Amino acid sequence: MRVLVAWPPHVPSYFNAGHHLAVYTTAAHLRTLAAAPDVQTNEYGLLNVSWKEIGEDLYQFSPDVLIIVNDFDTVDNLDRFIEYSRTLCPNVRIITAGRLSTEAPAPFRQYDLDAIVESGDIELGIAAYVDAVRQGADGDIPGVATRRDGSWHTPSAPGARFAAGEWPLPDVREIPYEHYDRLYARDQSKFCGIPQRRELVVPVGRGCPINCSFCDVPTVQGLRDRRLSPDDIVAYIEEAQAVRPFDYVSFYAPTFTFNRRWMIEFCDKMGASAHRLPWKCATAIPHLDEDLMRRMADAGCIRISVGLETLEPTGLATLPRKKQTDVLRFDELNQVAQETGIELNFFVMVGLPGTTLAGTRATIDAARSVGARVRPTVYSDLSALRSTTSKDDLWRFNRQLLFDGRGEDSYPWYEFFFGRDEHVTSVMARIPKVHGEGGTENLGVA
Image (cartoon, rainbow, N blue to C red; front, side, top):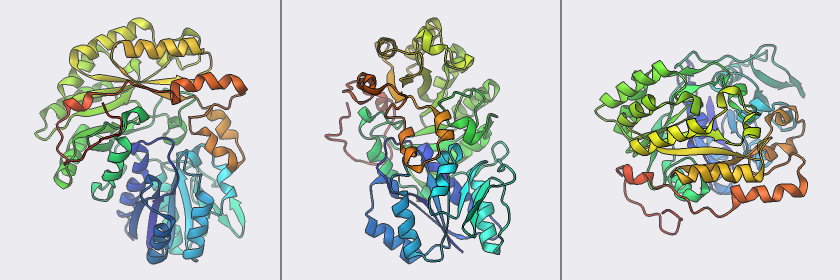
């Protein structure tokens, strides 16, 4: 059996290599099955291929199963991609899985698909479907909606999830890092990568109990924090370095510092590694303190992305209690960051209910005044996404355009997101470059 795991063609509104790992963790999991299929992977959303080349891949490989990983932008050309696949691979079975179909499965039933992973860890749902196709089975699959005889059948049980640390890790040999490098080269785009340096993303954790209304993690990954062991993380980094050169590590987890005991063990393991690299992570202010930040710095941490969202009191009141940050706590962490050399990268939510233009500007100015990097994101109401029924509305939830009824009043808010931004990172100066040469001329890197 031949299986193609694909990220479909589209123009990305935002790039985070961690989101794209689903292509490679899915492939890695399928390769562990007893009846392992012949698996190929390709990311067509990196603007590195033409439709002619996509057609060649489909026609020449002729997959029995096409797995389309979906996200908040990948619906743009989904109908066309499916039609190419149906035309050039007449017997293909097509399943989609990802953040968007888990949040809003109903609209995906309007596409010419055979199956949709609606709940659970997507690798497990996909593997169950691939195995069913291999056996010619036509029964119920937990977490997976299937189309049979022209009708959609809702799964009778939710999808399964991996136990902590049991999910597959990507094979770095098949990831197109050269294209990731180009997407990260212009820091004003405010993507998560660091310009001029190559990033190894390690999927450390899944799930988050904080449960912010604008975050997809609780629905997609669950409320329970699950994570790899520190020993497995260090071993994976060392194995990846033996295969390809990397400049730094990005630890991909919803709230990296959520488990303090785990963090202390992790910092000890990273600090003792003979092949350690500088690293960055993302978390929330309530799960940071001075002692922990100093331990992280000693273990090689050079950037912490923090879900600040807002410092405006009326906006803070709309956040979960654990995310509500007072100014004194904000000032304390900024002071520690300056002393340890850690760059704080604050996520600020533009258009968050309860916030004002003046309050948003004050939040951004406060962060920049202490030398922090700011990455704005436009507020998107995921409760509205979960109730949407039209596939034509899915693209609107990509966190770049407001559509909450503000009308003409929305225009001034876009200054924070699309306006000129001269505040760029310099953290790459602390990261030795080992992955090779390559200029970033005329790409806006300071």
